[in-house]
Image (tube, rainbow, N blue to C red; front, side, top):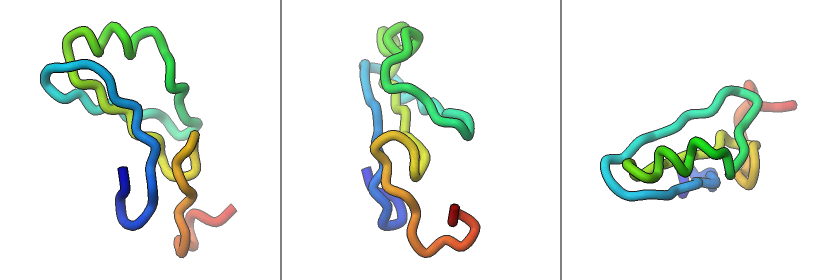
Amino acid sequence: MEAGGTKLHLKRAGRGRPLLVLHHETGTLDDLPFYDTLAASYDVLVPHHPGYSRSERLTGCAACAT
């Protein structure tokens, strides 16, 4: 997916009502056991924050520079 011109990696699985899972600041793994449990009942969406996993780093963001 793309947000504000930055490509973000999105893990998606399951069917049903959408369930957005937001991870903490240190990132998340693509394959955690509870994602499969949630996907049995929901359309699970796990976007990775910019700069994590396969998501692009933000550009032009002074506060995001490392």
